[in-house]
Length: 120
Image 1: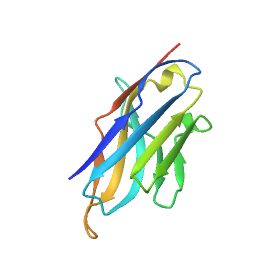
Image 2: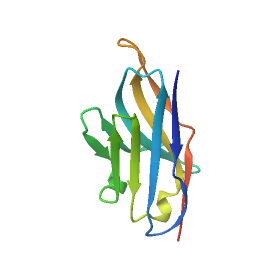
Image 3: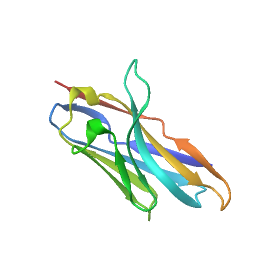
Image 4: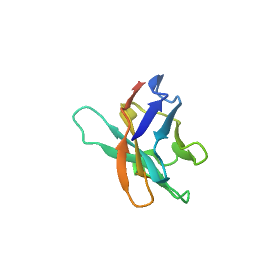
């Protein structure tokens, strides 16, 4: 089985920075894509950023120029550097990954979520 474990959330003032980390462990043959989603109270879960196995990145318009996603294929990890944080970035952030556990079987996995709170 595969597990995704996030870390790095917390409370920060507007304009500050945080770095989220996500580590994948378990039976991993190949990771196709990894990404971060977030969900604020009363809102649907939305994509923040993702990165595929080739390194191509995709960002939500609301975070472009402020957030950066990185991936370390050697240790199956992913990071989200969040700068110039705004109160509207407050949400639970979830790590997501599409992973092949065997050469033929892949599935989607989610982390448990980490709270990011930005005070004004």
